Every structure is written in structure tokens, then in C-alpha cells.
Length: 422
Image (tube, rainbow, N blue to C red; front, side):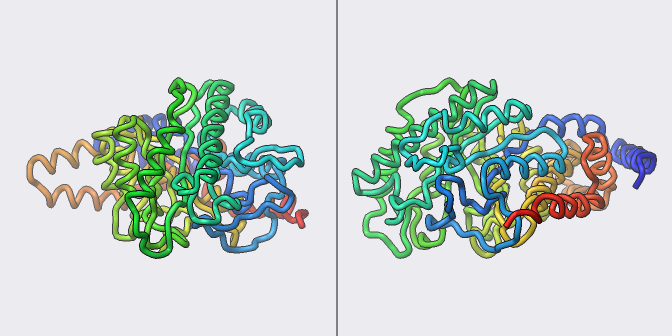
């Protein structure tokens, strides 16, 4: 579609939305201000670069597939991220895991990592006007083999992981100061068991004490913010996860921390959208990890599904979009990884655009009048509004490919860059 056709289609769509009380130009202006926190670990199947042969193992995480072209080092990963960002409209952040530091070929254990190991990432982010977020890596390590890290009954194991978490917060504050934008430091631990434990209270008491120790040092919120991530179950922890939703929801509320809701960390019949208003009445801020679970916490590439519609519609309707950080968390090694980043991020932004184009005030008015038929009918009408014309116009404004150009862009990069990796 040429530029004139895009403008014409947008003009017609804009008028239709105007008749519903929605200003499409203002919606696009609002969408431009939203920064997704794009996860680095899609680019190498959650391998990291701690050693030359680093690869994912254990901890309730599994990546499937062996599509060619995986990033083998930091330079390749950065190049792939830059390409992915060029396919995603808007200005976004990058989320790093601790195992993606630059260690100069030396074995640096996780309780010894320092800001210097992430100076290269910070410099890169500054050059690309990109904020950074950070995650401790509490898996794929011999000291996580028991299934317990911060909740381990072994004082030595627990001390190791507490020190890792402490250093992750220090690194996050360093990144925030260097880039003049607060870095969100997220803690997720895989601690739990395959079968029923005899002392649930004991493990949760230990986790609480570990977290209290980790958070004993305060950092200015303009430098870093703490987030704690809940989970229902994982591989090897089907019966019991120490850091459950109830545990972290209470901890975050009492301690003034951000609660992280990962879409894949709940029962398939639970609605993460429904949790937003419940959490944000008691917590000032919220972190989302946008993913697509399929039967288990499989972290599939995000698509524009009903769950995405509902998640972002609820976020916008609640008036809490500005209080919520939106991160991505999926990984698929069976398809082109740059394409996976692009589709997942673009689908998330489409969900946000759809939500922002919704006549929320009119829907609420119908509800308050008791006219539930009108509320339902208007919500259904929105599904066939010319949303795609607004999305194409937004992509054109941001100088990124429209949907019908995406496949060609990814294929060209695969032929020119990924094909040379063995």
C-alpha cells in the first residue's frame, strides 16, 4: 500500500472513530509515549554468555527448537536487537538477564557480578536512547539444582543467591543513573517442588527473610525500582511454588514493591486482566510480563488474542496505564528469532492501540445506565472498526514496515546476516 493510500484509509478510519467520540490523532500520540521492555533472551534461547558454551538448563524453564541463526555472542545479539527494534514502531527499552554480562572470557560467578560487566550494555543503550531493565538469573546454575535458591534451607546456597540479588540491584541502580531513567530490577526464583512438601510455611518464611535482607538497602526510585514476580507452577515445581501470587501480592503491598504479573504464570482459566484493578488499588505500580501460555507456562510468541485485548482494555479502562510497566517475556527457538521479537512486540502494541481506540467513557455510561445490551453491542462493534488502517498509519509515521512488508524484511536479514552463522 502506497503512502497516499495509507493516508486516505486513515482519514476514513479517523472519521469513523470520531463519530464514536474517539480522537485517533490523540490516541496515536499517546501510543508513541509507551515503551515496551523488550526481552533480550528471545535472541539466543535463554542461553546467556557466562561461558563459551552457556545454555539453558533447569529451573522450570524450557526452550524448544533449533532454528538456525541464534546469536552466539553479545555483538551478534545486539545486532539482532537493533534489527528487531527497527521493525517495532515506537521507542522501547531492553530487559537484560544477569547472565548476559560481558565477562571477558573469564568465569565470573553470579555472586561476583559487577556494574563493570554491564558497562557495554549501558553504553549501547545510551547510544540508542534506550532504557534498560534487569533480571537476576536464578536458574541454570549448579546452586539451583536442588530446586531452591532464596528459599533454600541450606544457609550457604541461600547466602550465594542473596548476594546475587544484592548485586543485581546495585547493577540496576548503576544503569538507572547512567541512563537517567529508572531501571526495574525484577526478581523471579523457580523455588518449589514436584510433589507436595511437608513444610510450606517454612519455605515461605525463608523466602520472606531472604527478600527482607536483599531489600534492606534502599535505592532512590529515580535510579531503580524493585519488582517481584509471581508464579503458579513450573516444570519440576508442579505441586508447590514458594513465590506464589498470594505470597508476592502480600509482600509487594506491605513492602511498597512492584508486583510482576506474567500472563503465563497462572491457571489457564484465570484472567490476568481481572487482577489489574485488584492489585492497583493497593500497589502504586505494576509490572506486566506479556506472554502467551499454551497448556503450560510455555512462553509462546504473543499474538493479538482475546487475552491481549482484555489485558490492555482493562489497563486503559482502569486509568492505570501510566502506573504500569509493560515487559515482554516469550522465547521460541523454532522460528526466526528476529521475526518472533517483531511479531510479539507488534501484537502487544496492537493490543494497546485497540484499547486506546475504545470509547471507554461511552461503555461506562451505558453500564451506569443499566443498558447492558448497548454496552455489549458497542464492544462488539469495535471489533470490526477500521483498526488496521490506524495501525498502518502509525507504522508509516514511525518509519517501520507495515504488516505486509514484515515477512520480506525478516527474510532479507536472515539471508544477509543469520545465514552466515553456524
